[in-house]
Image 1: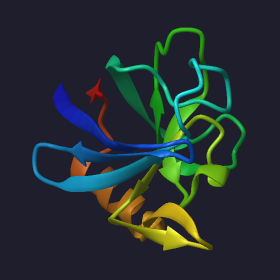
Image 2: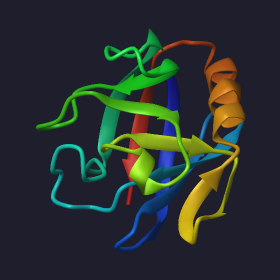
Image 3: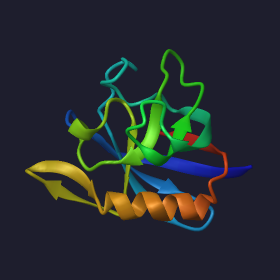
Image 4: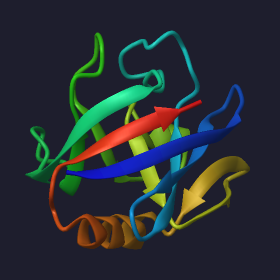
Length: 132
């Protein structure tokens, strides 16, 4: 099973931004700030998680995304497209680069980043280790 690493390096009251390192590529991740692992409003705790490819999320809102499994006290954590913390309900938003959108910290080129990530991972499950 492939291993992917997420290194959190930019944490503030607005969001957390990280580098996501796959065996062959690097992406950017944006999450909500740490709020004691509260559902829908906090990033998830550091640790190692199994991640499963989903053709479609349970709600049907997201397609070709990944589901982060076994997060303590949490369910429904996805890696999906989005740019700013307001686009996440506790999920990980993927992008190609960092920037600003409407005066908020953001990850940019999210739609194409998700497509590239799915292609890079081959729609296969992987282990995600979050550090920081």
